[in-house]
Image 1: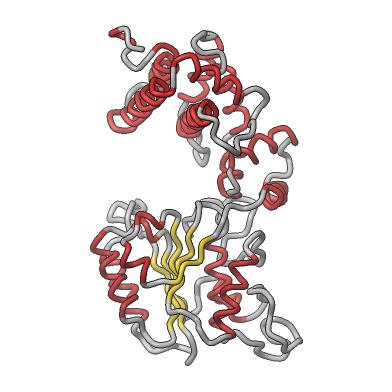
Image 2: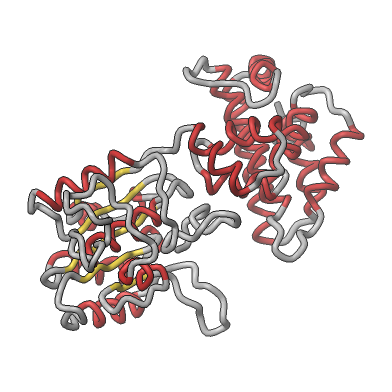
Length: 377
């Protein structure tokens, strides 16, 4: 699956992950529907990226494809014939192994495909949905339920989503469709209305901390604390930030922006040089990560100046420094400068601007205004 964090290095991929932490309430809802005989034909599993949505989808698939009951000598759920209280399955069981390899004949997956150049497409296309539907219309290979998983549903183009909508309106018998979305608001309202929502919340810090320690055991306590605050309950984001040196990058942001309008030229050029370098193979792009953290600091500063509730420091003094910057220039000016920085970053992506200069210009814009050359605010 493509959900960030579900396939993060150091943790099992969702199809073979035997554990799901922090989403017990969602599992209970599925179990209650199953044992009450009111299983919907489609669930919409929605929530932020990297919190375990894909893992949950595969857990449901294993449960349903087993018939939701014990099978074999010891059974899928153990020797006890009592209904299970979670969707956890024995990873050595035949059904679990087949689902883990995506080799179960009654499991169908819709996801983005490689294009003619061998590059992963940015969207799910209508031809992908038609091929997916053709497989679903076949009789069950094992005489029971069939499960279909739609990955990154928000990436379907309009024609693809309309094709999926027809499946949702006339689903094949004994078929469960699990739609996974990182941004359900990007989907058609009619598509969403054909599903039962199963929203997942960000993970508690205790869960993210536990999983992060497993995946990145060498991370220092200080860096772990910074990453936990930046990750917003997403283990996927936490691992990505750890791999990108996110704690160090954020400290750079605070060191440079925390003194605005004064600028430490040496610190700024050190930050720009570190972010502008080309990433090594397999390494996350420091420019993308760094500029995202810069925007995070700006947004947090505006919220702090507006007395938004629930804010906590990410590093010592970062909130107060940001609040002071906004108080000095005003909230409206802060929004304008934020928009100007956003335009600079997007221009780098579109016309391949020199990255170091983009970073330098962004910081000067925050310090002196979006129209530096014309004496802007």
